[in-house]
Length: 429
Image (cartoon, rainbow, N blue to C red):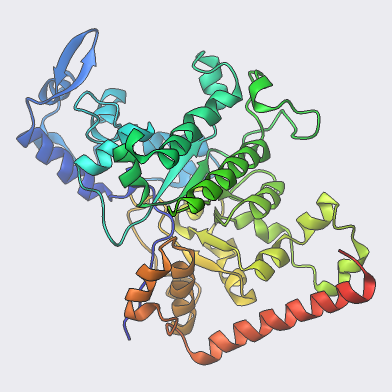
């Protein structure tokens, strides 16, 4: 039986493995050696000049020189992992990072970029469109860095930069024609940064609104997600009225940091990436619900796993990257989540840093039925439109046995019935 699987979480800048990147760089040195790629001190610099400055030619290059593999030294060190993402090895200095993977290089942003219009132009010019791919656009939580460099005056400018072009192109597609075309391939927006960073600011009634937030400290995780959620909700309503595609909020959540991030993700997002911290908030069964005040943050946090199950909220898990960053295979909760019936899928995250593979079926002794369920979940989380999924013969949800599908459905319906029965008897809302 043919099984259709969707990789639900893969970073574009790290989507190639080390050998592919090495071949790509060698090819570009040979075929585009005289192409201008940088402007430094008002002088145009060609690709070959950059390499000559480092005393390296195509024959010297090796995988070891790239030094992008995430090894044991990156465990619980997100800062060291980030250096692997930007090529900290002998070969790739900051200049080369800009040339190869940063769309701010001078060649009309050929390789990467972050502004909406330029990103759209890059995507269209270089034909990154594919019927098998949907894009998520990541919004980094780096207000404090922009503020320190005097690039923004307040947090509202961050939101303006992200959402104003999206509202403009929805109102008038002709105002951003390339962006209008590109957004047809975008399924959602991601939020990403190191969750383990200490949050000095708390989000409550006293927290300043975005136009007045001029503090040098970075706003907390829930502040970012709340205002992203509010803007995406308004944007989607506008786009739906005009018959355009809508976007989901699918942030990195529950990888590290406080477990309350999971509460925020649950309340604001369609699905999340990672979610390994859910293992710290064990399932509380429906019979205990009457004890808690549902307006209590503690109560809802304690119920996180249960709520993720009831709503079948997607969790795109990356055991391979987690093994190098936060938690070993033996402690990874993916098989536990799958056993409980949570909507989990497997994803690769960063092949550039994790270029080897371990079969999940052999690590956790998963059956073929388990693997098919993971594949089915990946389709449900993928962000593809229903009409696209319906065209795939394997997407008719016959990926696993009827018994497994029936069991999952009946267990969920039974749990929901019990929950609403308790609510009716006790009056708890």
